[in-house]
Image (cartoon, rainbow, N blue to C red; front, side, top):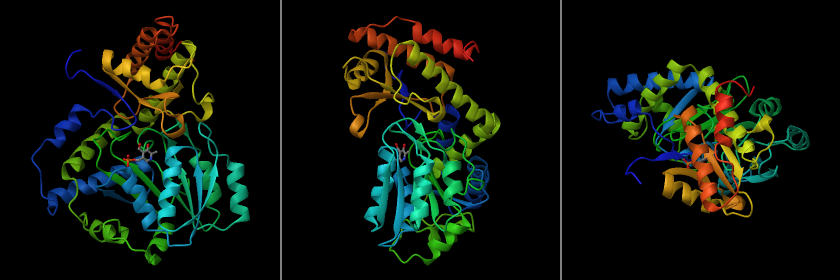
Length: 384
Ligand SMILES: Cc1ncc(COP(=O)(O)O)c(C=O)c1O
């Protein structure tokens, strides 16, 4: 196989646009400079467009989990009652972090492949009093997008804060932080935001600040009050990933030039094509319901007793295509095709064409070209 010709289709890290790579290779600048402060301000102003918020947004040198832990560390004190809405691996992680910080976590398990059921949330909220509600916007482990607007409408009527893990969705799936009553929204650089790993972005509402300022739990590197002090001067509390900031500045240029509505429409179109192709090939979608299927990742059940990891091995070794495997209880049972961030129509064509060849190679009956054709028809507008 040709060296270096790879097609990365996992849900993070995702491919990085060449202009973003070029921006990150510029000479490093000092972070206590006007130049950095100008860039920081530009970044935040445009992140506010992506998050649809007037809130402060902290760009922190963490992975996504670091952003989630920052949200918890600044709001949870031992014994606090927390409601965790769990639809897969990352919902479980959010609950686990809260437990580590001593929270008394009430977990609703909606089941893998299912979305949050608003009725269940409403019942829990009316029977209990919670300090926080934790939810996942896009459950990457299953390919489900939750109804954050619906959850926010319920939580916003209570004193509880709504903390949302938007790590894989923000930048690819619309979110309206202010209108939907989200109190802390977390995302990370390496997914829909088109950057390498290394930055988390954490937005904080005024309602959340009231809790954060009263919080007595230990926090240092993760302290949002410390971050806020520096933010007032467009600075950061500690040395930031300066090159990643430069990349983010350029990634946001790209997003603003495309227009966020077009960015969201592109992701929906890619998901529609991927799903049409999977169905045409006679494979089963892990999330058959289109209404809550993710626009940025498509999970497919591995067919006919084949371990999904075996399909992935052929894809990688013979065609240079990398899909993600199943996580947790779904290991080996599904494979996941990411179409988030710097992803377009021809990425789907490559993914589906390679999948057809891998299935044929493994001996699974497949009519070559059937999935490709279904995706092409979606892109040509013939499958509306
Ligand atoms: C929804 C979601 N939350 C959290 C994370 C964790 O992010 P990180 O691996 O950057 O810590 C991921 C990463 O896959 C994710 O998809």
